[in-house]
Image 1 (cartoon, helix red, strand yellow):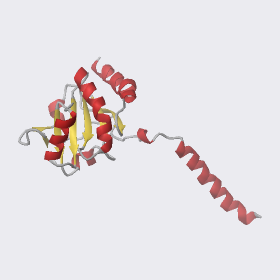
Image 2: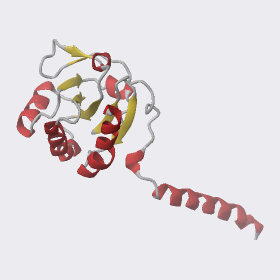
Image 3: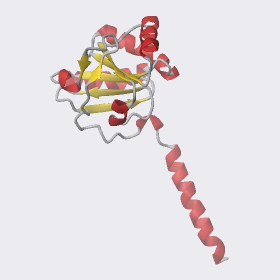
Image 4: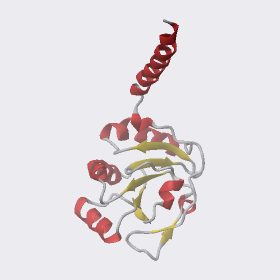
Length: 174
């Protein structure tokens, strides 16, 4: 009888961990970068490869960084939300074109609209690694001091924009 208690106890513990894990929202993976300065980089712009932009250039304004790619199906899903958000001029949106081909990315923006103040090129994915990108799309809100205040994993939905991102932007700009 006692020889069954240890396996039963292990099974019950594993079942408990599984039950807790199933209650978690996979879009709310905690980021160790929230509350810390945005990682430094200097990236060429998609439209003008000779021009370069860094987070330091954006210091003093609240901005949104959206990591995207033309090959990303979920990016297409969120794109109309970003286009509408950019049209309203709530905050500048900078794109980080992740592991993509320049011509494909430019064609994609021409076809679906360009919500970005500038789109930056991360051809080898090094900037994405520094930002802890799990996959595309991901979106960050960065404050005037260059500190990451929010990270959204996956496509930005109208509800996420309305309930989380825009209120945070209003607070940071207030």
